[in-house]
Image (cartoon, rainbow, N blue to C red):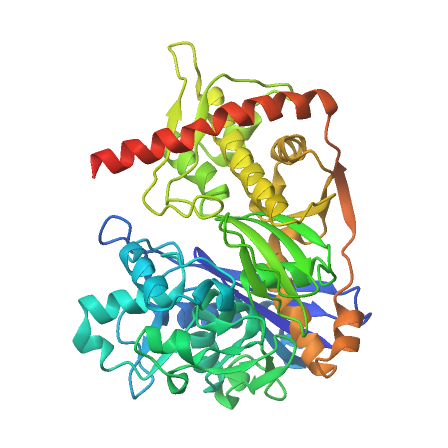
Length: 494
C-alpha cells in the first residue's frame, strides 16, 4: 500500500511518497517540495494566490513521477494537510475572487468584537475566542470593506479544501480544519447555522464535512495520468497542519502531546472530549480522527523568529546556531511577537523587540535571546493549558526547530519536561496526511486509526536539567513583563 501525503504550508508545498508495507511502520520513499511566497501589501496583512498552491503541487507531483515512477504508479490514496484558517472565496464558477487571507493576517481585529457581540454564545459553541487569525472575522472584514465582492461569494474554502477542489472537483473539508473557522459546532462536529448567520453566510456556502480518515474524493483522471498513476487514487479527508502532525506522531489518544517549532509554534494535547477554556486563549478543536478532540496553545511566531533574525544578521540559521556554546547565557531578552500573538494574549497588534542590550552584547547573545524568547512564549502556552486543567508530563518535538539540539535542550529546560525527537519530524504534516490516506483505504474507522497511527521511533530524548529548570523559571517570570511593555509601546505608537 503506497500513499501520497500533500502538505500545503505557508512557505511551501511538500509531497511525500510513503510505503505502508508494514502498517504503522511506514517507509518514506521520496519527497519533493516547492516554495510559496506571501504578499504583505499593507501592515498586518498576509495573503497568497490560491493558484500558486495548485501550481506548486503539480510541480512536486511531476518531480516525484520523474524520481520515483514505480511508486507513483502504485499510489492508491492521497492525504492532505493544510495551513489553517485561510479565507479562500469562490464565485459561481469556482474561481477565486481575491487572494486568500491567511492565518497570520491581522486586519480583522475589530470584526472579532463584532462577531462575539453579535453572537454571545460563540465561545461556548466554538470553544475558542474570536481572533483575527480565524476565518469568520475575515469574512466580516470582506463584507464591510469589499461588499460587492462579498455578494459574489458562493463558497468559502480553507486552503487545503481549495487544493482538493482543484485535484478532484469536490468541495469537502475535514473536522480539524473546520474547527479553525469559528463556524463549527465543535462538540457536535457540524456547521453552526448561528455562527454562519453572524457573518451573513449559510451552510450552502460551506463545503461538506467529513472525518479526516474518511474517503473524500478521487483524483481527476487527467492528473493521475500526468503523474503516471495506474488508477486514480482516492483522496482522504485530511487534516489541518497541526492535527496532521499529531497523526504523524501517533498523538491520537487522550494525554498524547507534542511541541511544534515550525513557522508558528504549537503545544498540543489530545483530549477524549470537547474541553474548551477560552480565558487564556487556549484552542479547543476537533481532531482529524473520529470521536477525538484536542487543546492547543498557539504561538504566531516560532522558528520564523530565527529565520527573521538570520535574514537581518546576514547569516544562515545553522551558522548562527553553531556560535552558541552549550552553556551559553545572556542577559539580553527578546519578545517574539513579529506577527502579534495568540496564546495567552490574543493580541494581533503587539510587536517584537529586543530588551536589555548593552554595548558588550554580540550576535550570539541576540541569537540566544531569540531562542529563549520563543521558548518562554511556549512556557506561557504551557501555563495556559495548565490553567485549563491540562498538565503535560512529556512531549514529542516536531518542526524545523527540532533540528537544533541546542534549542531542543533549551526547550526541555524551560518547559521542565522530557522532549523527544522522533523520526521524520521535519515532514510530520505530510507524513500525517499520508497516514490519513492509508486509514481511508482501510475504511477510516477506529480500527484503521489504531493500525496506522502508531508512535514513531524516538531518536533522542532531552531531559530537563534541574539547575537550568530553576534558572529559567526565574528568568521567564521576569521576561513576562516584556509583553506588557511591547503591548503598551505599540498601542501608544498607533
